[in-house]
Structures are given as C-alpha cells and as structure tokens.
Image (cartoon, rainbow, N blue to C red):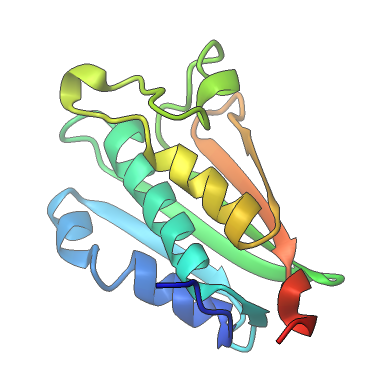
Length: 163
C-alpha cells in the first residue's frame, strides 16, 4: 500500500501516536509525556511517517534511556520556523554513550542486544524523517543528562505540487 500524503494537524498526529496507545505502558513504568505544540500546527506531509518517527523515538526512550524501575519524562515539542516544522524530542534519561552516537541511526546497531534490542528503532526513525518527511534529524546529549533529538522537515512536503 503506498504512503498517503495528507493535510493534518501535526500536534494531533503526535498526540495520538505517543500518548494514546502507550498510556498504559507509560503509566505502569512511571513515565510522563509532555506535549508542547500549537493545536493549529498544520502541515501537508505524510502522517504515517510522522507517526513512525514519534513511535520509535518514544519507544527508544522507554527502552534505552532509563534503567528498570527508574521513572522519567519525555518532552515533545513542535513549532513552525519559517517554512519548516521543528520537532524536539527530549528525555531526562542517562543519555547515549559518546562512542555510540555516530552509529545510532545505523541498521542493527544497538546497545541493548542482550535485552532483545534489534537496532532498528532509530534506523526506522531516521528513514521516516529523511525519506518520508524530506527532513533531517540530529541528536545531542547535554552534559546535564538525557538525549535530545531535533527534527526539521518542510511544513508542506516537496511533492505537494505533484498529483
């Protein structure tokens, strides 16, 4: 089935994706998710790619950022900057080891192989951004801890002019 481009509320897509299906797991593990974006943030893009992105980033935070039994939070913000949507996903977990950072988007790279990690989550997120949303993704681990993913993609997908 081909991907479907649609005009949609980015905030609604993010909220539905990261909050609704994951709420029982998030609550069970003591996590909070804060969503900060304008309800009117509309874009003409591929909502499925945006949903894949958010799902994989939230799952990555739940799986890798916190030790078993550790509580934490994830903040997801989205805003318009010029012609782009800038989405920021930040957790307050343990961060990514510096030697792993250059490889996190590589297929099958994982720091959790012994815990059943496949190494595909961030690779899927990367492809959702680059191929699906025509955007770019960057990652940073601030000195105070946690991980911040910054995603920038056009508010109106470049193929919007095509039938």
